[in-house]
Length: 174
Image (tube, rainbow, N blue to C red; front, side):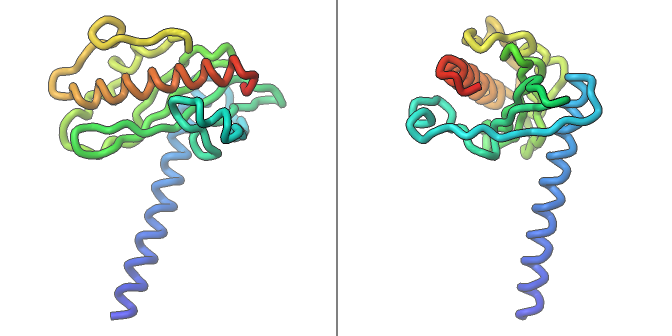
């Protein structure tokens, strides 16, 4: 019985590393595609607890990064979660150095229904958005039949992120 439990933990731990490597590879692919570069480094932001308390989304060393190429900041990306009907899904938002949304991509969708929220065509609506804008459902961002909960959740998270980035920029944190 102890061997079975030990094997279970080994499989769980190794699958976590595999998933993490897959997510990192997908993020790298998107960043290199957006900025048309082959290599970059990422640097996490260190936001004080005082500033973090004022943000709609808490920033930590695993969700918001500066993208550096040739010793210069070329943009930022956020790795977040939104809630669908029954489970969370992971997404990234890539900003250029002027803090304009360059790309939004759903990385992992875990439900049977609503996966259309990850379509390139639908996500393209976010591109070009400035952080000072609040996007409105059915005005700026179209709904998707059968994915209403995921759409609204994603829109809510992106709007909170836009406000967060605006605050960080105004406080000289970016």
